[in-house]
Image (cartoon, rainbow, N blue to C red; front, side, top):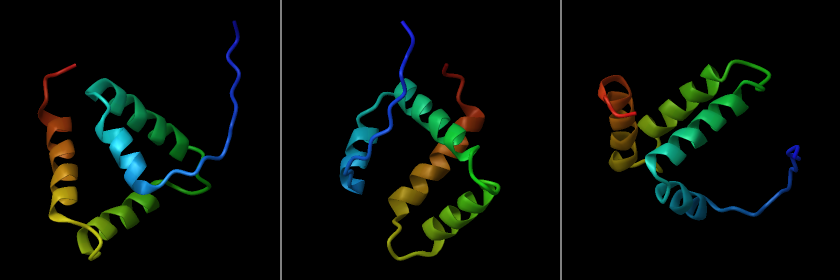
Length: 85
């Protein structure tokens, strides 16, 4: 049976999205991040700009935390060193 793609708007606050993401297993988290990367392919300019701004925000903004920065660093580390698949 063919799949139908539907787009709907939903109200989703940051805390609810964070709880949802944190509750995923590693396979689901990976699939989500792959989907995010695919979405950025449709940006009118390079997604590198968004990653630049995001990195600066995480590094310099008072709304960021050491925990968030450490999490991203650990993702980058394990991306290069993990043997899990």
